[in-house]
Length: 141
Image 1 (cartoon, rainbow, N blue to C red):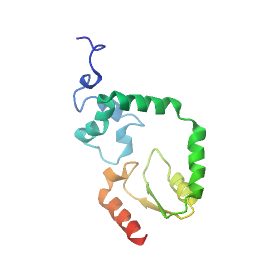
Image 2: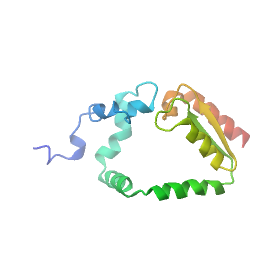
Image 3: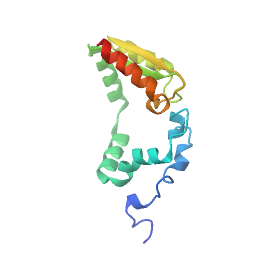
Image 4: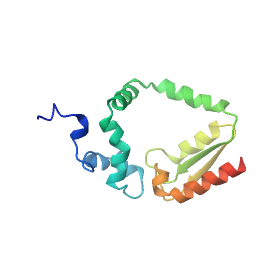
């Protein structure tokens, strides 16, 4: 069977599929302070590799999203009148700290909490701290 006729889910062995991509400046390794185990990354990406409907939806989103849609959604946040918690990573390489502040300011009842020693995937870098912040927020509201 040639690579072109294989089903997408059989092209890559677990752990090897996206390894080179992980090291890119915008790859998964850039999203955390510490490496995420291959088994976890494989679980995250398995649906994209194995489900044609998910790949179709991902391609559609990736090729059809308009910047204006994102700006409109951000403006809509000004109307959200409930308490809102914005949790931001202090060492995030993808989204600057200033963006967290701006997001919290967009929300009329927004509150910003920054978590140190973490990047974009706070739940991977600081799960206990994130859980504590969420519990505190829920208890207050």
